[in-house]
Image (tube, rainbow, N blue to C red):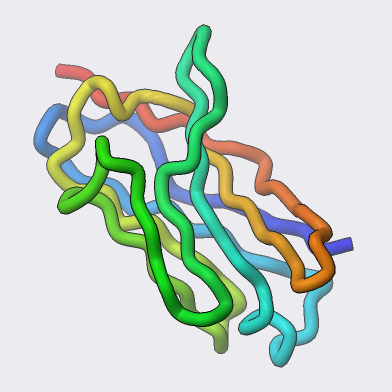
Length: 119
């Protein structure tokens, strides 16, 4: 079973930046490339939503609300995926989760990390 450990997050003022990291363990490095990965978030009282995705084929996609502000990237050698968040606004406040999906459809989730955007 793949384990995902998240880091980053915290409290930031509007207009600020944060970088989230998600590192995979119990995974052979060569298989990392075959995973689709994504970042989701869940605000209080709302459903979990996809923020950014990165496919094994190299394409990326973003929620309209974060386009131009957030960027997803992956480092195969470190078996990690990142979410760079710039120009943060209060509406970005949520618990953020990383997600890996294997080529066979097995899904793994990180433990979640709180991002709070407030002055």
